[in-house]
Length: 397
Image 1 (spheres, rainbow, N blue to C red):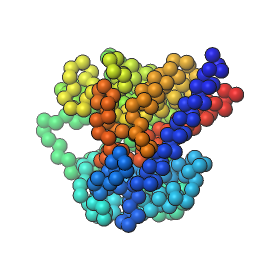
Image 2: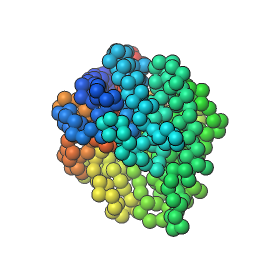
Image 3: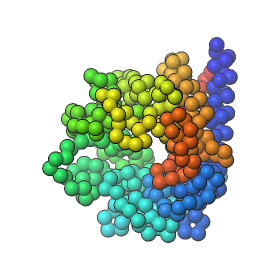
Image 4: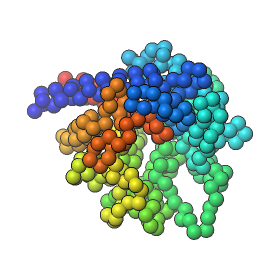
């Protein structure tokens, strides 16, 4: 009934908001290195620092998260959040990239000295996110410049300048499109628009490249396809990551809503959200599989059957966004299913979630922060869900 649904919406909203508060309190309390700047990323279940390495993906994401919360959610408009965002950004500008090449590092030691560089564009993507959000936060010109210059590099290195990343093009290797690249660039475009960085036609190019990853015949989304959208040989060509497809789905849905593209919206909902959620769902133990093989063979990645925090959070965002767009009951049911599994299995005492469960849903690694897990997926998803739920509750009246 309508009344029941209303109670339901409110109850979920309360849980989501409380979870967001607990999460942000955890990062504010334990992750700040007040002596050397930046954030500690490797935090145990109790918030203890078990490794002082600073990962640039996560530094950039945390800056973006803080400054976005400050700007978009009233109760986080506090000096502590503002100052932490700015300080984190300054640490990144000072230490996060090679001054000669403009390439970002992957990881730094506690003092900001570089440890490792990746021959990809992902550290740069999160650098851009950090800088665009700091520009809208502070209106300071330097962040606009940092964001624009890095965005131009990202697009160049993702395209004709790929050789500069230093990855040798070997004879036997198939040139392929990895879903992550057009996805990341598409998600950055509305952000860099705010710093005046515009590249006409790029959004459409990203969408087109993303759609090549949808295999119509098998009704699946593939992580890697050839540049023409054909099958890549072997395991890499059959690999599916349902959580990634679903995250990509809500990026596409947002774009489709903004541009009024009904057909793209339908593709986003059916092919990138509903279907991957259906084939990704573990019929035996619940939750969403990490990797799958398009032909039903065993994936070769050891973590293939684990349940990861971010996968479930992206599914929560996507299903709720689809429900908000369509108001169809079945999408609320999908949201509730993912919400229930997630809230039953991932939260740890004291705020934040475990990132990695085994197939049965038992916590396998109990740290709250690690090399790829920072202050990002959980708070971003909760922030988006809170906003959508508030809107739904208000409109229900």
